[in-house]
Image (cartoon, rainbow, N blue to C red):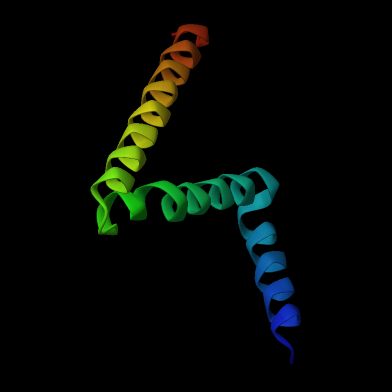
Length: 76
């Protein structure tokens, strides 16, 4: 088995289990985690930690606004 075959099987099982929307959500979360959260924690350079923290704060603020907007649309 090649690495691409193993990855293809893993993605196929993930899509089968979570569905396309769940898989996309998982993929976006992993990208954000690797690209924003880990650098804000583990970088040796203060400017990288600061930039990652600012980006994470901005993303969380937008997510909070989106949550408030979606709650306003709900009937209850």
